[in-house]
Image 1: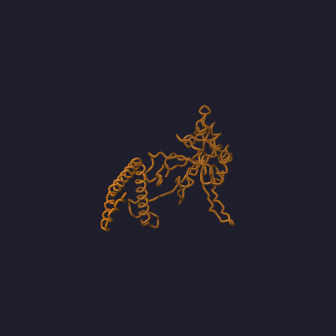
Image 2 (image 1 turned 90 degrees about the vertical axis):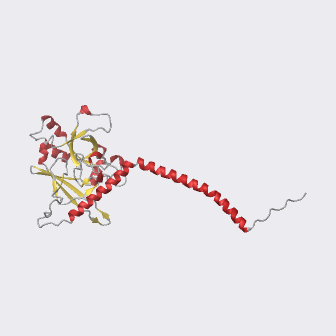
Length: 306
């Protein structure tokens, strides 16, 4: 038995050519894989963008809407004013007055300046007056409204009740920070009542299930918290003397309650968070939230906030 002859040794140049031929055969496969992966990724991205086209359009419109508002504010700030505070140039937009309504349908409160939060002007229509709905309209639904809002439409004398808001700035007390105190003042026919409506106070009241009320506000049902018997009696006594109200309404005015929005900042319970989304058909593009582009919530107004 003779052993086979060993294969002839390849020269260095032949080895290099063999390696190049092997690598060149792999290139088409790699290019095909990369092309397929790129096509799948681009198709998935196009499909995702197509499904999110309305969302992207809202983000785009919201960005340019806010940009136009900032340019308008910058332009108004650059306007030169006279000593009387009047704008010299005609055709320029400027704010002639600021007003809020601490209690819905009571007198307005003029301001020289104000702050805005996620709901609009601070302390603007966060409180309203409600009365029980007739028992025949009660429902077994736990989310059904048991009260309905009352305004000057049913009780014109509400226009005679003046309002005021007194807010104390937080103060440093030792190592602890004291929460700010907000006091609501009501005045009518020489009588005055002051009620603490601070977020901490509202949060304490809404921790009691008996203080939680489901109230209907136009077509919405909102969860509100009762502010107590003292302010309810103060308002009820005035409403029952309304000479322009219907007799049927006068009977129900003795059961009115004064309620407030829930305090979201001081409450960790997700089920007791104020939620009243605005109808997207009635808000400008700049009012949508930045990235989520969701519809913002509003207070106890008629649905058209600042």
